[in-house]
Length: 163
Ligand SMILES: [Zn+2]
Image 1 (cartoon, rainbow, N blue to C red):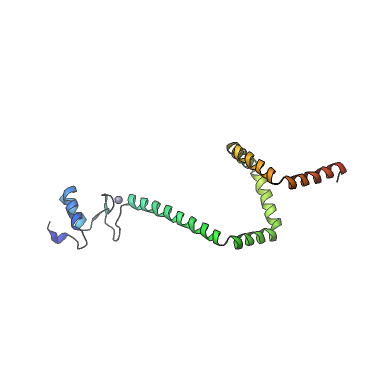
Image 2: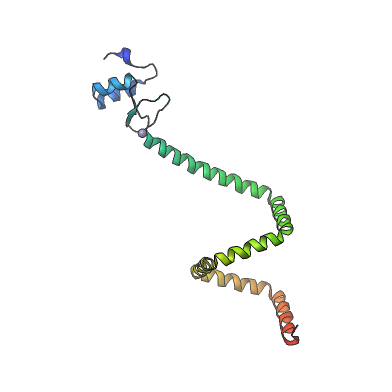
C-alpha cells in the first residue's frame, strides 16, 4: 500500500485518521473504491459513486432538511398571508358567498358523521381552557352589552308574541 493508491481528493487528515482507525485491508478497500467512509460519522459502506454519507447520516440529514424546510415554508406562508391578508380574506369571503349552499351541506354532513368526535373535542377544549373561555365571554359581554341586550329584547318579543 503506497500513496499511489490515495485518490487525489482525499484529504491528508482523512488519510491519517484512516491509518489510525482502520486496518490496512479496510483502507485498501476504501482506496480501491470498494468501500467508502462516511464524511460525517465514521461508518463504512459499499462504494457508490457520489455517495458521501452513510444511510443513517443521509436519513438524519433529510430529517434536518425537512424540518428547516417546513419552518421556512411556514414562515413564507405566514409572510404571504400577512402581506396579502385583505386580498386573501376577500377571496375567501367571495368563495363562501358563492358556495354558501355547498359549504353548509358539507359542514352539516361532516358534523353528522363526526358528532361524537366533535363534541368530545369541544368538551376537552372547554375543560382545558375553561378559565380562558369564561374570561373571553365576560370580556365580550362587557364590551357588547348594548348589542346583547338588543338581541335579548328581540328574542323576548318574539317569544311573547309567538312570532
Ligand atoms: Zn454516517
